[in-house]
Image 1: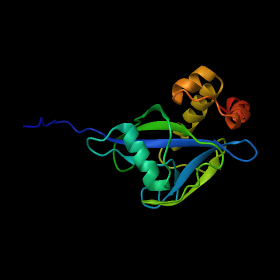
Image 2: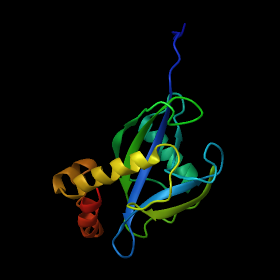
Image 3: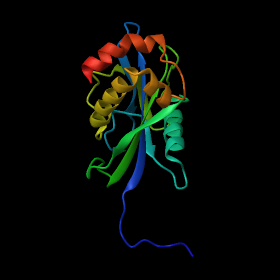
Length: 177
């Protein structure tokens, strides 16, 4: 017989921060426009609720694919976010992931519950839903750390070398972290 837990517990969500560079070399992130409440019409990181028996990274990949038709490459777990009231639907704990793609590699298309999806400047995004401004701030800091160190980059992104486009945005990322 399954164990029943007497105490309420938060739901688990995932969010993905997919970063690239624009033609001028500025750091960009992919955001979705929420199609439903809460925060309908607001911009947010792609993400959503983790299904039962689903791995966190698999959930982040699934949500990105559903909301933007984008398949993610190597990912790095950025952190966990559990401030009460971060989601008006109830207490949630969110786990955020960081991923990168080269300029022009991803042409995202809104799907599932996303009304739109677009690339935005990482340093000056539109107002964000939930606590996604905090997640994005932390992502910029972590991105700057790993972009500044070849070994950290290789460890984070499965032995890959820092791509040339990323080397060009490194100083801007470091300055804006």
